[in-house]
Image 1: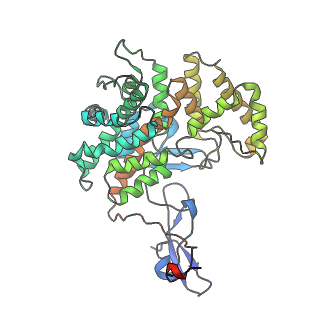
Image 2 (image 1 turned 45 degrees about the horizontal axis):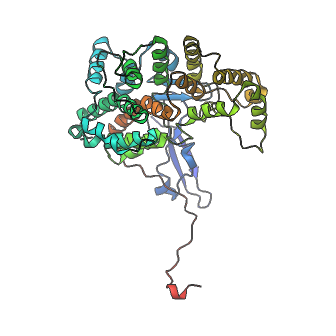
Image 3 (image 1 turned 135 degrees about the horizontal axis):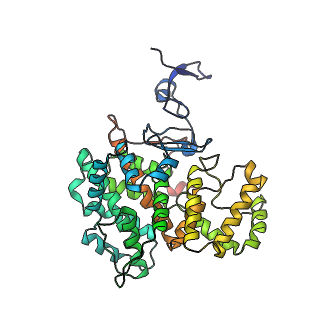
Length: 432
């Protein structure tokens, strides 16, 4: 059977090679260019890898033009409506929705690993009282290998699975402990009788003096946010995890690398930037002036929470989280809060303004997740930590998939060198 190919010709020499075309289940096909260096002495030049498929994966698919997001083939809309975050974790890790028995076993396994080693708890004391939560998260997750050394053989599938379970189970505990440490409250130990998300909220917000009052809509709003952020294909942080993992580094350091990448304001800090923008606007009456400045090419002001690098249609996650956000604001009686008044009016104007419609600058998931986190009472500097908790399963699933590749090679991007030509060293006395 003949494979489809693309012929690439070097017009300087007349040499040609036939590059195979690889087809996926969905999305554009790709050209296999690995013979370019050996046959033509050329590499491809693709800054930021915007047209390069860096790996083959079966986990997540995005169609940015149509606004489609699939986890293992399941539409994100169906999962957000019917599933739970732990079930989505199971799906991303193992490829199929679990049976009831499999789900019970997975939940049990997660609940048995939510507790932190007391030595790791003491690790927090080395941080300043005003340390950034993401700095603490990078440090604590990176240090996990020092406290859980019994499952670091990355060639052993059982060890890989144990590390995956530990990361998913412990990230909410680590994040909640960061929050408590920075506000000067005692560390709240996890409870195995609670669901994953309820336990997370219990550790974040409860205090020893009185029982924590759970709000079902608040818990569900956070769960939906976690589901929507669980994975998003080969973004910067996921690519970092894969690149680090290709060196056969242990998974805790790989995920720490992903967290460090997520910390960048161009990646994981967008929902925090949305709230800062709303504070800058101050009042709904100032929105028109803010939008006028945004449209002015000479004004550096930015409109955060609109548009997306991948989605050129309405972000499918934004459609889902929008209703969740509205329900939460209504439940908590916050719809009349000036900050949310600004957000809702800004959304209304943007969806009706031809400038935004023509440029497909629709509200994205960060616009609404920022409002949800703010309504839940989560401090601004913890927003990206919440994102990291959600994304941990995606990072781990991508790492596990990569580690199962039969011919795994260390990642090694190439470059176009434009520096000085070869030159000889000159003694300092002879330099002019």
